Image (cartoon, rainbow, N blue to C red):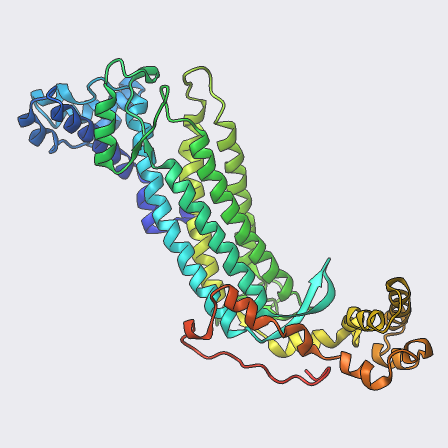
Length: 449
């Protein structure tokens, strides 16, 4: 496990103590099921339910057996008397290990679900707060047309909602148990016992299995974690880009006394977001391993087992950590609306090029001609760092079609933001859901930011 990035709840899920407790839960549930069909005496169950696994003793036995399940069973048997003969009746190791692993993954999913819900809430609040905070939209890293910072965050809200749905579906897939004996034929344990035991554990009995639960289930879970991690990397990368000195529109939290560089005291680096970007790569790598684990020899081999002891705990720990870290980043995010406004003005009106072109087309020009006229003036503005509107006013071909007052009216930032309310309503992000205040539209005059 990656101790540095573990949080208490998730760390407990993947602890050896919890794993062996889950093994014991499965064993007891199976014994209870056997008792219900009359194979095990009912009076033995009360004693079996008191069984315990002494991990220290199990480690001692393991040195001799080199098999963790037989070591586990040896430890459990020592906590019982003659009733120990009913433990593991008709089972193979994977009946217990795979079913218990499903219980662990379900537990982990429940923690991650709460993490995602918290992030959605924090993002939604921040999006609504900055619903009308204008900034430049960028494509290819180049200024395009105005958006709002709230719109950028609202996209993240909707993406995390999809991730929540993905996780919910993955939970359904991995919430399955398997109590079907060696190679899955039920020769030594009837399907009725499997159904009863899985029901007691809150799992669905897999309709068919061989010696193991099929690893496409685990791969779906792992690829879902990888997608969640990739979304977090996407968000973190955007914050990193907006924090660049030349942009300076946002900044991740930076506490008093914090340092960014051992050599340069002025540095304020986006190191939290960079951490998320790095850790997400590990989760994606683990997802690839999970997909490779789908292919096993015949009814089973254990090539998947060694990797799952690493990739499942570590991925859950990492995603749990990254979700919590990004929540703290968003809560403490420093946002600079004035810098956003300044950056919108950098290209001296070039961002209105499409609107001018559409106006010329509306006046009867062909699209090709309108594009040509606007681009000619746009290139002059780029090369000479000149005001785009003034160049258009000085172009007789354009003013012959668009008088100066009409041209000036096109240079209105608010034009691009007129559907913001509708977008937020479609997402269910309304003022009624926000406990704070929303910065209302500023009544922006043409190019008056």
